[in-house]
Image (cartoon, rainbow, N blue to C red; front, side, top):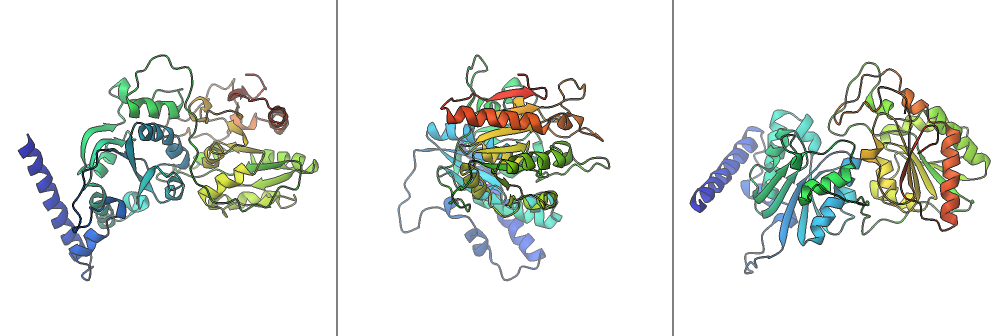
Length: 416
């Protein structure tokens, strides 16, 4: 068995070397030698200096593969942190978008990869990118390799990895399936840690980064500072094309409702800041007549968390900044409709979800991969700015009184 395994790894290494040399030659990169290709390996994956005698580490290693959206990655971090507390050294294959955020966790060793090149690049670019990734991860031996995807094609990424226990999502067994209507954070932990599916009273809270950059906002000069997230991030690796209503529109709270809420807040003399990514820049035009602070597209992911720490509350629909706000200490109101807050809501104190469309037969319409081809997201329109403002006042008053509120889910009529 040992001989056959060593033979397999030797063959894989020979294929990797020969393929890389051939691809570099075909692609016209003649000035790059194989020696340079090997040197492109990140520092964390390199072996000890040849002048030093290598010391065998007794610490267990785990390799996690999760590119995903911001929320998907952050909902897997608590499970990875539990592995870290069990003595694992956590390596994480991630996309470049979430890399700066994972670098804020001192116990995570990010292995960044150009995920766009893998999924959208030309065939030769895809192969070279995967080979470079293989060169980064095939040298170390892992005790656990977790590919947090159902699609079997993602397993190609970890093909040459030497691992004792490999894990990937699969619908063939309850032990490898994320159960619907359960917190995805809890389900990631159940599958990754191999926890028995029995009585569990408390959900896992979001894990905050160890280090964050300073907030770019000045000290607060008004009674309250509220951050609004009027946009919604598009899919990073896959964007659903619908001629009626793209998915990011379906899960957005109407921009008119955000403007109404912002007007009510500024009329009180409160400071209002807008958060979002570069794709949400058009949303800021709707607030041009209001005295707001526009930070859309101007912050890195770690800076968004720092800004949320300087706010009293954040109001957002189901999008990446909502999960970033959950890493801070502010009050958080998430507005849901097509997606299920029981699955996606960050579960920590001072977090509230308002779920519209309770009486609609089509809610929720997100199946974990695609949204319905809906022409009108009536579930989101049912959530009124007056209700959001009322719940916002209640949460802020309770926090000022020192009352710790557990996470809750309200319907659009204000009932639990």
